[in-house]
Every structure is written in C-alpha cells, then in structure tokens.
Image 1 (tube, rainbow, N blue to C red):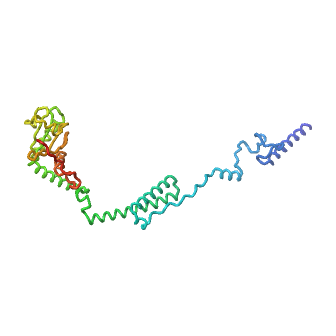
Image 2 (cartoon, rainbow, N blue to C red):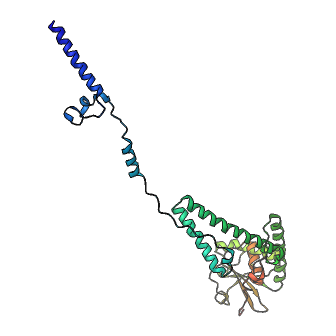
Image 3 (cartoon, one colour):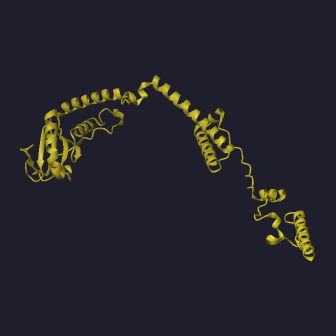
Amino acid sequence: MSRVRARGTALGALAALALAAAGAAPGAPGPGGREPLGWYDRHAEGWFWYKDPPPEEERKEEAEERPAAPAPQAAPPAPLAAEQLSADPREALRRLREQLEIAQARAVMEPTPENVRAYMAINLAVQRRAERFANVWQRVLWEHPELDPRTEQPVAQAAIHAWRDWVAGKVRERLRAAAARWGIWYFYDSTCPYCRRMAPVLRRFADEHGFHVLAIALDGVPVPEFPDARPDTRGWKERLGVTTVPALFLVDPRERKVVSLGAGYMAPSELAERIYTALEGHPPGAPAATGAGPAIREASL
C-alpha cells in the first residue's frame, strides 16, 4: 500500500512539473525570478533556440543599418540655347564642351538616374548639333567640288585603280622628259652589299626611262652593271656631302644643278617617285599646294 502511495506521489509531482513547464512562456524568468539559464530552465523551447526578435528590435536595427540618403544634387545646366551660341562662338563652344564634361564626370562618379539622364540629354544635344554640321558640310562639298580632296585622291575602290593608273602615266611622262636634261650620279663601293643590290635595279631603271648614269666607285672598282665606273678623283664625295652608299643624285650638267635623291637601297617605284617629287616639288598625284617646291640647288661640277 505504501508503494502504491509513493508511486502516486511521484507521478503527481511529475505532472505538476509538466503543467508548470507547459504554462510558462518561452524565455520567461526561471525559479526565483532569475533569467533562464541552460536547457533545464528552457527545456520547453526544445534543443534549437532560433527565435525571431521582436518587431520593435527589427525596426531599430534596420534604421541603424540603412545608409543615409545622398545629399540632393544641384540640377545640371541645360544645353546652350541658339541665342546663347550666336554671341561668341568660341566661348559658346567652350561652355558647351565644359557642360558635357561635367555632366559625364558626374554621371560616371555618381551614377544616379538623374545624373545619367542629365548627361544623356546634353550628349544628345551635342550629337544633333554635330549631325547638322556634317549635313551642311556635305551639301557644301556637293556645291563646291573644288573643296573636296576626294576629287583628286578618290576613296572608292574602282576610282583608286583608275587614279593610280593615271598617276603612273604622269610619272612615266615626267621621267622621260627629265631624262633628256638630267642624269643620275651613282656613288657606290664594290664591297657594299646594298650597292650590289642597287646596281642592277638602277641599270634597269635607267634603260627603261632613258637616263644616263655616271657611276662613281669610291674604292675605284667597277661592277658588271657599270663597267665604265670612274674613281672619285675630283672630290665629288666631299663636295656633294656623300657619307653613305649607295647614294644617288639627279644632275643637270649644263645648268650645273644637282638634286639629292637620298642614300640606301631603293625600289624602282620609290626611285621614280623621288625623282618626280624632286623636280615637281610635290609627290605624284598630290596637289601642288601641298609640296615644298623643287629641291634643286646649284653645284660646282
């Protein structure tokens, strides 16, 4: 009988503890009014103590973490109006460029929708002004073709081939006429590898265009292309300032005039262009106004 009573007493105590634990709110103070510590005081919450903070704490934390709103930006200046551009075009262009640069820098460094939109507006205004300028430029070229450089040096592929053929014909005519008055002096050294390459090229070039070539061997040794080469017994090297071989000069013996064509190996096309440029003062096919004038000087030959 005593055993049954003891068991009932124990079950009653356990039931009382269970009811007390079930009626306690999670996180409520433990026995004696102290804060609940450990699992034995907070066993009703289970093993995992993940709880959402109260709404007041959430709002407080969000307010602390939210970044401060940026200070209001001053409105960007509007693009210059037409009446502002007519007073001083240089100052107006400078101000327009400055507005564009400031708006671009602000949009890149602080890319807010307002800054980007302001830059796009100014950039669009500048683009439209540039398009109007380009359209007027094109119409002026149509009405005044003498101002269009493409009439002298075309850019269309078919026209380029025709232009090159025309220029080559003019060069051949000029060289043929020059060969009747001018000759070529050729300074070389038989041991120079570039001279050995240049000699056959110059021989064929002279035969094609009718030039007489006076070959001057600085070492006194003739070469197969110029078996009648002369040694430099009159000091022409010093008088003409020859420092590098092969060296070529265009010479008019009657008028005692000379034109330096340069030194080093030259292809036939390059040699023809140099002779034409030296006599005409501008490259083949280029306007005469772009040249520096004929490079002819007198010399004591």
